[in-house]
Image (tube, rainbow, N blue to C red; front, side, top):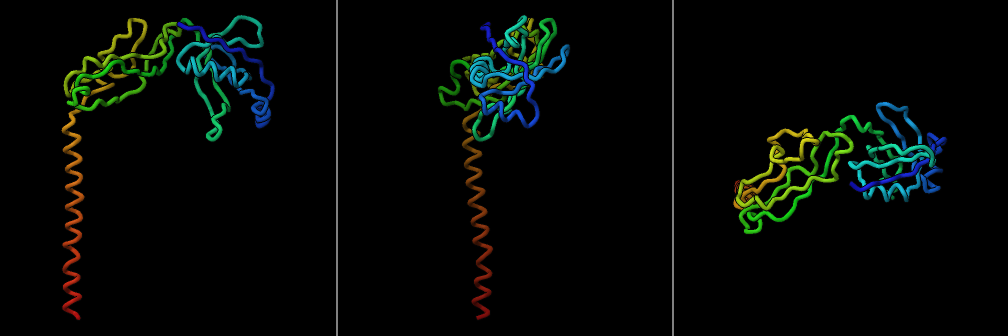
Length: 221
């Protein structure tokens, strides 16, 4: 697994004054964990952005504080960004214990192409984009890759119980949870036709309802 490192400094500025930190190109962070006291930190936004783009929120990062002591293994747990500028506002880091299991959400990537979709027999629907797992921090993997080349027929699917991530990683989803499936193309077309027919009937009913009113007005005249 690729090694990601991040250097941070202790932060003494808190509250509304952290705005000045952001103006100086620094991002306030909070480090917390089950066996440590929360620590206020700060880090270069450029360095932090580079690490986040590679490690995301499900890969271990070696955090070194003040350039002293040994690095601590952490996971990024929460990222706050400005809704307009998209600059980082605050980041929470979780200090892991390498001998204790953690839960994480791993992104799902589909590989290859479904024959059923390639032949125009159906439409591929991805029901899940992430999968919840539990494992030791050192056993985390960056992504879950699923080969969909076996989805050759309509109604074929891949469920959580079909995946084998090894003994080290436990899948927390229910085994019957559908991750990706092939639905009939005809069903989509029938639903579209029925919807058009319903709209047509509503228009006709509306037109028929207006005729008596016109005749009554003519008879009154």
